[in-house]
Amino acid sequence: MKKIILFLVAVVFLAPWRVSSSFLDVPPRLWDCKIFYGEKGYDFNSEIKIKQGDTIRIEGVLFDDCFSSGIDGELKINWSKSGIETGSMKKLLSWSCGLMGPSVRKEFGDSHTYIQSGTYSPELLAEDPYGNEVRKEWTVVVTGGSDDDGGGPAGDITIGPFNLPNPFGPDVENFGDLIDKIISFVFTLVIILAPILLVVAGIMFLFAGGDPAKVQKAKKLILYTIIGFTIIALSKLFVELIQGVFGVKES
Image (cartoon, rainbow, N blue to C red; front, top):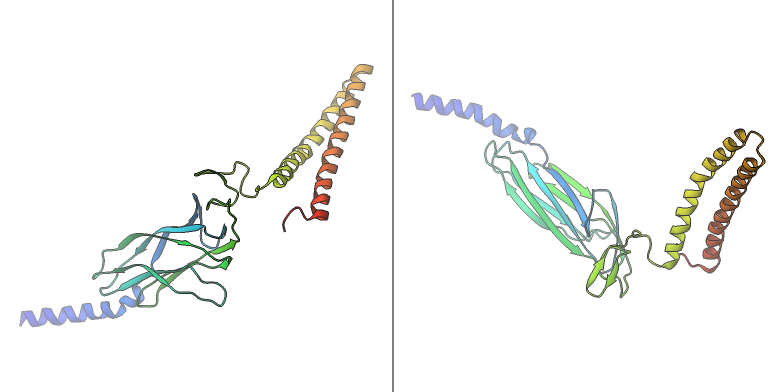
């Protein structure tokens, strides 16, 4: 009789738990989930610019709290999603939970090489049978490659078998870009220094005390500051004009 009573009590208490477990179950979580291009990691919703033949990889950790048994989840990725072309989902891992745990923690990773140029939207999907799901998406812009790309991030320098990082950044790929970057840097520096030099010249005037030599020195500082600022401004304008007329800089 006692066994029957214990069995009925177990049914009364466990059955509602099993039925309500779908409401208690929470969506899976993705920790430190990033797509890597070279050594740089990109969080979801980021835009990643690469070239044809380049490879990117995804890394992260999946975590899922388990509140009921029999929950089989799957983590999938769609590398080739592009506009109306949905591509196909690739399963990265699956997991199962026991009754009331334990929680699941699994590291995952995968890589993909883009052969064709275009804009893609890699999508990562973690879901369980109850309909709980987590989606993460990125934007990958693939442009045409060249023989000297070296397969690395845009702007890297390839010397034989070595692929060296571009010290000027990925936006400097030729001599014209380098000149433009230098002029922009000097122009920014002059914008900062010119007002400071003019203030210094004004202070020199105030404390000149009528000394012709000090007054002349202050005047020269003002003159040289104005001339330097004008030359740099005209240089930047001239470079942009040449680039616009001859189409040197790509849009």
